[in-house]
Length: 244
Image (cartoon, rainbow, N blue to C red; front, side, top):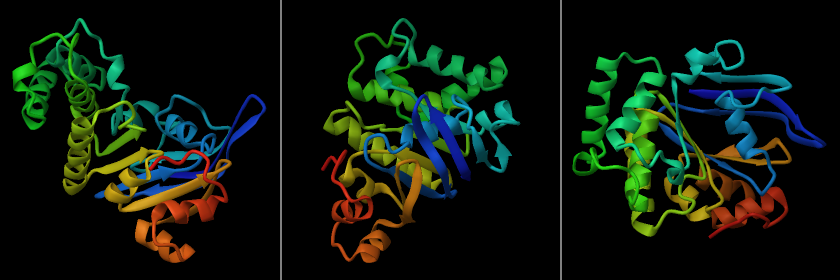
């Protein structure tokens, strides 16, 4: 489970987070939704320990990220930009490297790497260099790196950005599978269709604060709207940052 409690973070003259609180539960896909500048990326970076909150706490399975950073990070999987892969490495080398970075011995990392390659149906590309990979192959490699150490929690920041239709379908199915296996999946997105189709819970934030939280259906009922997009507009009072 992932939880943030009254997070505050100022970046320069901007109050990026202003008392933000929410929970993302195990066995659910939780979407973080908000207009540009709402604080979504800041919240995710704080959860992963890339930023330090000015006030409040970020918890991963009950561990405070600020006081138990290494332990908390090992229970998180972070989906990186698929276009930022180390192109000289093969997927096997890339995934194995990050497994060891998350505390696995070389033998443990080798076994875990083989398991995730099979799980992601990557055997045919496992020993090819990443240079020249398709979008889908890059996405699979990046996601395999995020889950190789078997974290309970997966964090993704706009994961479908730049992916083609088939790669997006593969990504959505993989996230659904992780949810069904009991993982906590938390991702930010501007794409309403993606959030409505995937998410069990949606967290709407604006100006660094929680505006509403609930299932897509519950948010529609709350606002009296028939679509998540219209509910979102009513909740935040603007259509800035929306993608269909």
